[in-house]
Length: 196
Image (cartoon, rainbow, N blue to C red):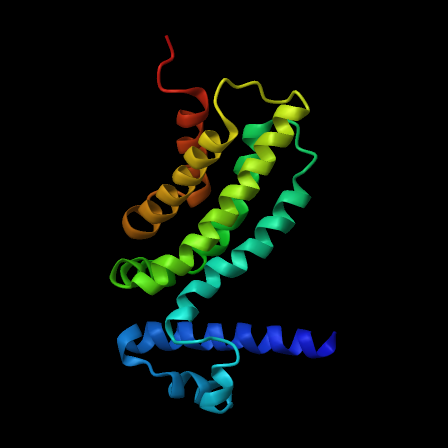
């Protein structure tokens, strides 16, 4: 158990040191050797934690999945499904907001790299499955009555989540909090566009 905790600690340190180097020098100008040296480890040891430099950009998203499970468990007793989903997604977005420079970098690199896009799609599918689970539970408990299929609802909510994250990161980080932006977008979708 102690060994696993040390491994997790070193992986997080590699991630944090890499972020600092990316911010200081630019992603393209940072080598794996520099990241390893900054952490006092051999270059080969780096590859025990990340298969390549690009994987550092994916780490934030992958580590979000653990946060997602913890957040879903923390908010499982919230009665209102819309509020429960907002709380869970907001928890995730707060971690991204703390790393907005990384998010900008990751967005640009994701567009350029098929490898990164394919790897990130796995995290998106897991997020979709978690949100679908929350929707199914709300339907089964009678807290949500909807004519829409669970998969379609989850797809829409995940789309709102990613739109909020990307638009806040790239365009509007200074105008409003990311949580407020998400809440506003969820209201529009949840309440429906046609209110007649």
